[in-house]
Image (cartoon, rainbow, N blue to C red; front, side, top):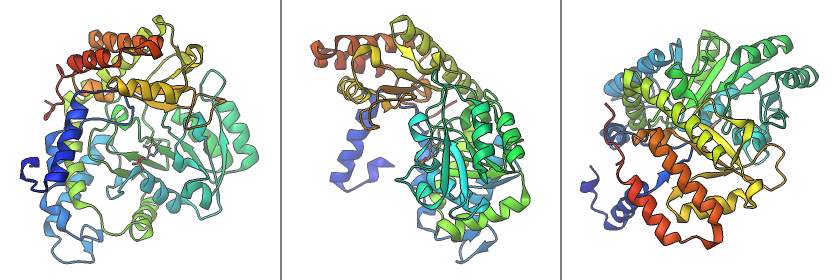
Length: 412
Ligand SMILES: *Cc1c(COP(=O)(O)O)cnc(C)c1O
């Protein structure tokens, strides 16, 4: 479809981005490569359609196929997660969380979550985000070694008496015990909101414990481990809560849904229902664990000492380089990572003492543990030689290595 773009200026930038992605080792934990079908659906005629409301209850006429495509996305998502009710309209994870809060509580009500600097998300109460401005947040933190501390969460919950507890993170490399979270929520009479934006693909593949039995609401993005279009979903097994969710998304926080993206979500859910997606998710975790070990052997410290999922954070303090410096240096060498705060970090967020690495994207390109070893070699070489590094030489080596694994158009 890209060939049909007549605007030369835009076309050129799209093609340069494609080339950049092709020659880069992408270790950004929240990114992935969606299939050609997923990309193409976004450019379909559904891009033209206004469809405020829900299937069967739209404000505009002409929604016969829009209703069908949205229902298809909903049915596939229900099957994927084995959940009763799904709203597929949120434009992003942030809007899904906003709608989720509004379907459970009112502005000024109390929410308990992990702080941003410990691996939480902006929408979990950051003062620069709507969440921190509209609701009254308190935060739990990780232990010094980087683990969730359920006793601490319970004791803060008892004192703070939140109406909502949030579980689910952007930079936590360990398994989340949703059952324990629900027990704590029940003790203090709070709702449990599980934000599985990062780990939803692993959950759909049964390689991370299921939150649905224990959560009042589950939110997720669709573009991370699910490998779909940028967007999100809100899910629940409770019919009363679902009525609130429907109203909170539209007219609460959004207008017309992006039906072209919903078509694309339907395709992604279809892909995720295949057995091959389950083995992809297992490979993500195998690669993540292998990369952790390969880096530990090379002298790198990993927050919490390991990874149970698709990501982990390297604590760079023993290498005398900040997260920002490491991110910038790696970028010059065609490797993308994201700087990340480590628990109790003394640096500011835009400097940070760590980098977050994830394996969903490289696993989509077909890298297995043998190639992951090579990725660890590149990182070691770059971080250890730092200022003396020959950037031209190593960036060419990285490009030659990764372009042998083209970004797939189809996942079989
Ligand atoms: C990525 C993420 C989101 C939101 O994603 P956007 O689509 O960028 O708004 C929400 N919560 C968590 C935990 C995330 O990691």
